[in-house]
Length: 249
Image (cartoon, rainbow, N blue to C red; front, side, top):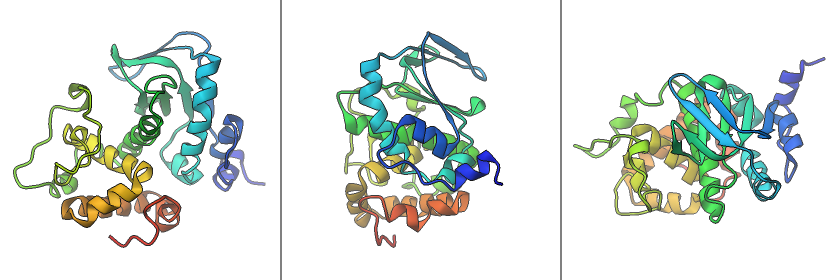
């Protein structure tokens, strides 16, 4: 008989399921905070407060739907053991919509921040999880292969934590090779923004790439890497994401 962990890798993700279904399919624990949290990582501190039942009721179906796009094998290889929902989420005092705790094998998500904008919340789910995957690939913040794809003379900014002004996450076609101003803040943000918007805004990103060779090259490299990381993140995955069926790059 297969061990519970191995068995979980073969389960189908829940379609319109519950948090409990998600826990079973991905062999992880989902924690809804019942008291204030202060979690100490490696040189950073995550804090959060308990969400209300109404906040969880609004957010959890969205989260289950988005997370269920991932093959269980992908989540397992990313080494995620726990998902925590808490409001007023912060890292070292800076408010965050989500936090990938690399050294805790945990993803923290704030169900309330940005709840007026479901597009934003969907993007956050995938963006922040990609940071953790990028870390497991050992490419998070040092990635010369990716840097070489950028326009000549381009230099990233001082990091995502330094670019917090309103509108920096909005899609734009004014920056060749990049989807949003926030993408230019750091190499890790560039990759995470691209991955998230490929899922949430597939038709738009595909159209942009058709006229932007730098963006098209980044998409090709990202897809190659994801397939190497987990073969289940290859064509079978992307064919189910709106905008990518039949895409050849």
